[in-house]
Amino acid sequence: MWRLATGLLALMAMVLAAATWAVHAVHPGFAWVQAFAEAALVGGLADWFAVTALFRQPLGLPIPHTAIIPRNKDRIGRALAQFLKDNFLTPAVVGRRLERLDAAGLLARRLTAPAAGRGGLRRGLLALLEQLAATPAADALGERVKGGIARRLERMDAAGLLASILEAAMREGRHRPVLDSLVSWGQRTLDAEEPALREMIRARTNWLLRLISVDEKLADEILEGLRGFLAEVAQDPTHTVRQRAETALGHLVRDLREDPATIARVERWKRDLLANPAVVRWIEGLWDSAREALADFASGEGAGRLGADVGRALDEDPQLATAVNQLARRAIAGVVRDHGDAIVALVSETVKGWDAATVTAKLESAVARDLQYIRLNGTLIGGSIGVLLHALFVVAGF
Image (cartoon, rainbow, N blue to C red; front, side):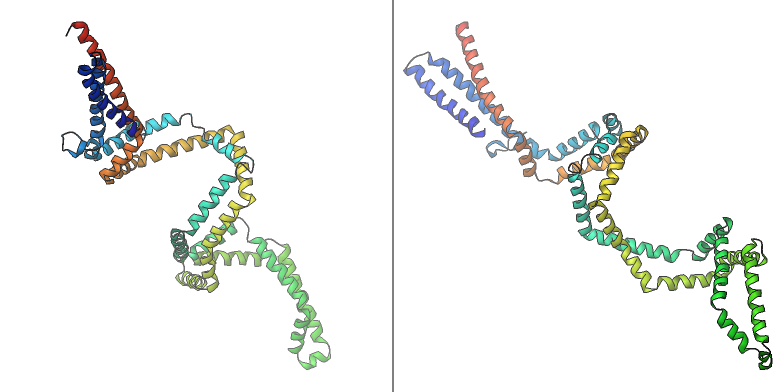
């Protein structure tokens, strides 16, 4: 287009020279051609000057008010940023634009699409996860997460937490099945260890009593007494042993909250546990396990099934869809409200950071064809106006 406009301008210059010669040497009627070419040349040159003056100094001459864009680069950046802020990045404008936004419908259609239709979404998610996992920032984040978990465990009030757990269990009666299990364990142990207990009683009985089998009767009495005692405890929810156990648990809860020695002992147990290599390895592996689980979930069928379920819920539940749409609108409007000025500043500072040649090249390449059309139009329209003026002069008798 530049060559076409420049070639037409050069052609008009040659036509003007030829028509000027022909007016005197051939025929006066060539004055019409001369008028067209002269005005076309003037119009083409004027528009060439105007187009060139936007981006640089014509012929390199320091003519005032030329190279307009390079000289006003920063002002253009500020004006562009202000235009963006006033017409796009205001909560009111964004709110009006988002009134018809159906984020829930769009999300539902994407999530309920066939597996082939969701392939791009899944591939994008996997690629994003892989890229995030491969960055140094992911390793740094993992270290911060693991360090945060370790520090949180170190600062944890283990005694107070244990006291709260025991207190809640006692309040809801969840300690009673534990006591039942202990009593049942005692009964089973008594049956299983009966031979050893009899041998123990026999070994501690005088030899004279063993001669008259008193040791056997004594063992029978002791074992039957223990069995009866355990059966009473198992059958009576208000048995004295149970009450004493509950009282002891209550004292333990109080000591865990108030007794410095008990609190210090639990704290030592906690520190020893956290220093255990197995616990250290567990904390170290938390981040890797979470990252691998997320990647497996995204790449497997779990993500597809969950996405389809969410999509159907959005499609079938109008209240849920309304809530999602409101959340999306508020989130976008909130981003504009909180970061609109930063976005505007980014545009302004970016343009300000460009060198003049970069700005000139970007803008000129964006409108180059239209600028050359201006030159073409200026040449042709100028020539037409020249013919019209010549006609007026002829009619007027000049």
